[in-house]
Length: 127
Image (cartoon, rainbow, N blue to C red; front, side, top):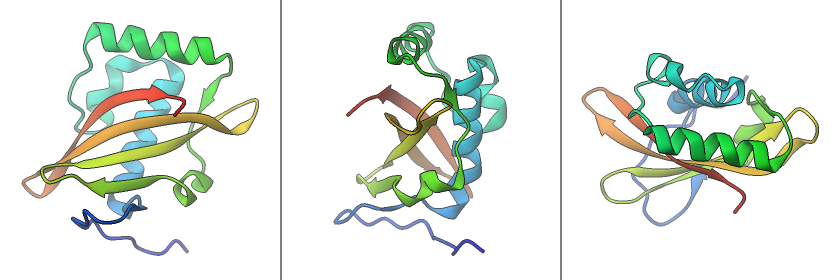
């Protein structure tokens, strides 16, 4: 059984992604992997992507040359977050069909919301 990891506002160290965010983040990655960007707001409270950002992310995935896949449990061993004073920066390590763990990372901001969270996709890239 996976240990429960709480959400904290720690500005001093990167921590493992909280348990409460894992399902919404996995759903977001599943939409990106399938190319179904229009489904993002329905899988999690996501700030809508601009058309240009969708094109940029699709282009980057295509240029990477491998097929993005849904997140396995293993992703949470290396994905991290850090409180930035008004939101959390989150880096989710991504996987591809061909290579498993990839060099790709999904960068997001998570904003506190009354009793919940809002997710904003910043970028998908190789750091």
